[in-house]
Image (cartoon, rainbow, N blue to C red):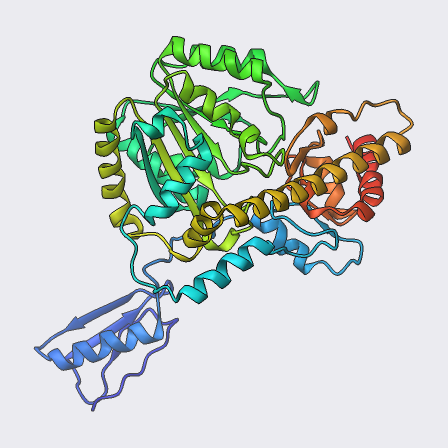
Length: 461
């Protein structure tokens, strides 16, 4: 066989040895190749083309840029790389024990033991998910005796936790309400905007956080919702607003419902913390149940990552409360149609855990007790942090907003530079918007964190 000799820096043709005046190749400075032939020698041409491809492997993905690190998950990566013994990971919202270790609920272990004893198989679920799970999750959200459930007006489809359920709903809005806009709170959970962007759903923001009071900008929120085009979808956090931990009062929820009704808007709830915020499943579902009771058609995305600790099981649901059972059946059929090409059908393991826990009175009672304990630990940490800040900070600053917030997150009011100081100087890993996850904090670490916050707040512009 003929051999090939060429230089990758040569711009002049290189002849194929043994086949003079037949075929020549030139390689430019940029690596581009130029093949010319004076005769018909197909084998030699193929040989040279392949040889050049081996010599200069240019990917068809050469123009793909490096994506920026995820602003939340990237915090954990930086935390793991840190060797300082005082380091704290207050970025990702995952529950930790007082020893700052991951926690698997006792009731989850019992439910899994029951599953093993039953010897249940691993066959595919239907597209809409596990029937027992869908029934349990809708009843948990709305109450088993809710009129919407009794009249079969709720379309429930098991989704890939909260994120997947939001994404499925966004695809539905894109297809069946293509002219509608979604309004998202400012600030909001970092993935909300990504979800609607990738689903092709236009969105804008409504005011929510007031930096002056480190509280709710209720007047701004109402004004922006009123100004939105009629028929918009208003994304609301059912409880324990992420990232601020600031929720409307029951009276404010009623006013929000009045404005949505006046404007013909559709409420779209993200419920990621039911039972995990206050410790009460019913209290944390107040906002959703209020809107359903008022007769709204409502979208609700659910997640069991936090309240059952099923982070990696990816268990959640999208519920659509409709005006009639006929509409609910048609909506459900189209949600299934959208889910089929996305992921075909959802995972079964976590769905069975939820169905077993909610469906068994003893396990359900144990779960509520464990949720109260987890929520109680976070409340204790929140109180201890406030006490330490108040005792150590002699400036007279009022830190009571920390006590008014709820759930696993606290918006500290620190800006980007101050948050960076928390990480660079104090090895406290958090998002740059000033949010900290109290679930990753222990009572023993509150004193250290208070020092870091006071230093960053007063000494960094």
